[in-house]
Length: 143
Image (cartoon, rainbow, N blue to C red; front, side, top):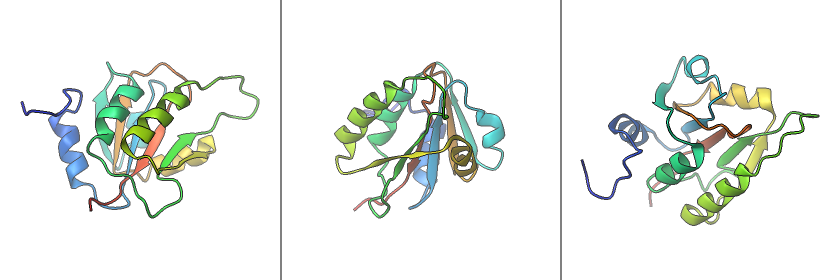
């Protein structure tokens, strides 16, 4: 154990975040996200007992977002005609603003999101039950 590191961040996830470089991406997937098939060429970390907001909050304490791209945070768009509400996105905005106040959040069409997620360095699978709760974080630099 170490002081000051949230227990939700496993040794494996901390190691992966340390290995990542500028521009690498990390996906945090909800419980419906096909994490194992998306992460075929990436590191897969399972945090099934946790929700995305608590995972996002813990990660952003240590993970710098890329200031050189327009939207270093990307959410999966709701499919046209799907009557799903996404109040969890408001939680994400608050968490992101707490750790990275200037970071902007973008939205990616569902199938394009999957394509981008397949390019990720790592995928974190959670037990999040909210729909469209998937998020991609692009790593920046520590100054």
